[in-house]
Image: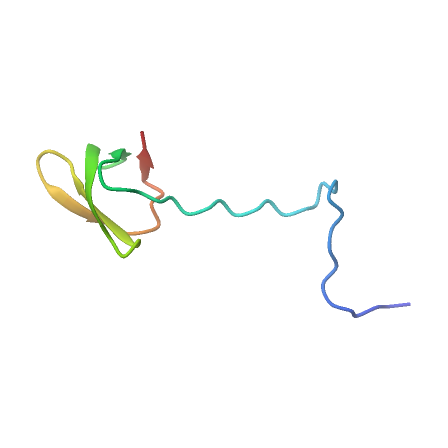
Length: 73
């Protein structure tokens, strides 16, 4: 017997449940950050919650999502 009522929901305790996707990183002006390539910096501007401009001391860089190479300190 086959049911096609839509996708099956896994039970809450099931080991086969998919992990929830992490929320995208949000940065604010003044946040201290570290970047894999550019090093330590401070967020100086946020553009429409999409890209951020970071002062790394020697230069200002625009960093766009995904922010996988940048973390908040």
